[in-house]
Amino acid sequence: MITQTEIVDISTATGTMRCNVYRPQGEGQFPCIIFYSEIFQITAPIERSARILAGHGFSVVVPEVFHELNPIGTVLAYDDAGKDKGNSDKFTKTLESHDSDTVAMIEFFEQQAYCNGHFGAMGVCIGGHLAFRAALNPRILSSFCLYATDIHSNALPCIEGNDSFTRTGDIQGEITMVWGKQDPHVSTEGRQKIYQQLIDTKRNFTWHELNAQHAFMRDEGDRYDAELALHCYKLAVDQFRRTL
Image (cartoon, rainbow, N blue to C red):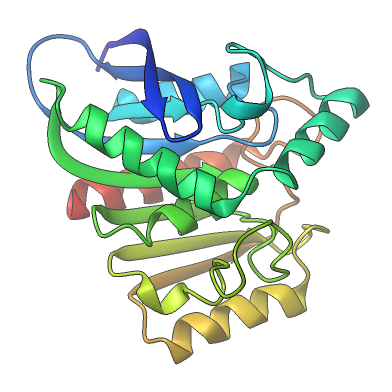
């Protein structure tokens, strides 16, 4: 499908949040996927990923995940300065603020004529964690989480007992977890810990471990694996078509 793009600024509990929306051209209602980015926010690779999903018949919403901590429109570079700023933001914003962002997006986009009222979530890196986190909201029917950081380590700020790992049992929708076995950010022990938690809480989940590095979906840089990226897009599209 040919897609179109628009930018909307929505109100959240912690201020105005800019979202890029990618959706099919023409009339119709489509399932809505909230696509959570890396720490660098809405970079060119993130935009291209969103367009790929939108071209398969979805309205894809990409929020500025650290909107409270940066001027509207901020995109961090894939360099040391961008990484340092993004990591600082990651360890500053609370999970509760991410939760309220998700609520604000659902409330706004369910009112839009192009949304059919069915919501899913997808993300990469911290965005994979946020897609997992979004699944705590019962309106999120399906989540596809790529190399999600900081779930196993409980490193992101939150109220005690409200971390994503502890609350795994509150996920009601279907969830897919995708990992790179050569990813230094999530160890084998960390992956095993999350897997066991999903088993112990009897969640509806699918698990993939690939021979890939961290950020293998990002089509810039040496870690990009085009074949595995295509495989994951196909898995995600199939899941969202089935569940949304």
